[in-house]
Image 1: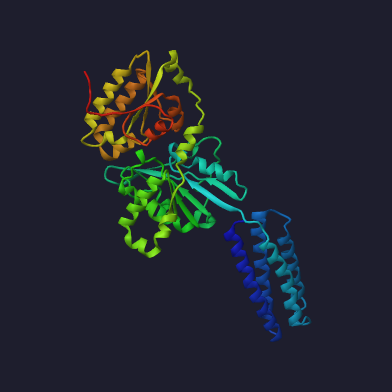
Image 2: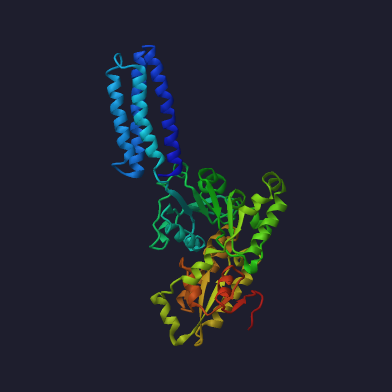
Length: 435
């Protein structure tokens, strides 16, 4: 049974104790009509309590047994209203209710934690935490992918997107349309999207904004879906809604934690003054990034269509392109650079390119720079049709990282995964093109 359910049942039982006293008083006044009506209410309430207990604990519980005797006693009193003494009626009602109350008090508490990822490719930022909760018998651990919407160029919302079917097979999925956070009130909610409405490309469904779901849990926890490169934090990341509304923010290192605290205090001095420095220290925790956990344990099962590129023990170069390359003012040079990279690696006997573009490349271009969408998609088609190298648009980032021998591409949090494994990293400049 959940803690909030147990608390609610005990509150209802406490109210019944008060009602019993009222029944005694009305019997003393010989107001039998009122007594009969109130007894019927007590019976209905006891039945409702029993139904909740059976839903959470199953059939045959001690609590339900006592409630059944309580209801039987109500019936006996109702047919003896004029004969039974008010004191005896009161004591008979109390004895069975107290037994039911004690049984409820002894019910074990089952706490619930729920994880709310929105993109399957970002599940690695929560996965190892979910696995840890799954091993703890005191917790009921749920994964509920939430829908999101891409934004149009004018800022309006596009079609609803949902990736619940794209998560690993070993992750049981809870349907967001069937589970009510408001009604279930999970003890802990984990999120990895901090933006709410303040993202130009996508937004999670407004129902799941941090400002809203904060009301539906005892503790809201935010873990970034990305890794801060070289432990350097940009100020705006520290004051996004996910950080503001979270009770706990889990960060990759102590150095990153100190920067979050510094920027948070600078931007929200009044909040810090109100709740105290100690509360801020507790809010930000340097417990590491789950992305590192997945990187070190991920299996590398190579798809069949990739194997043709991996003959002759070729070195695999992970090619990572960031969505900012398609922004206005950068896209023309960025596309030229892509063509040059493809020409350089095409047909090489010693290396093969594994191109893994940012999962929101096309969506970003549609929202921020629509005229570049078609030229970019033409390059994607060219790369795939000419079999220049491996094209990876799967949700499994860590398979590609583990398979690759080196990193080449834009600045990205993926760099940190390569550094962690001791693999070479080269950052690409769009402005350097050799003929």
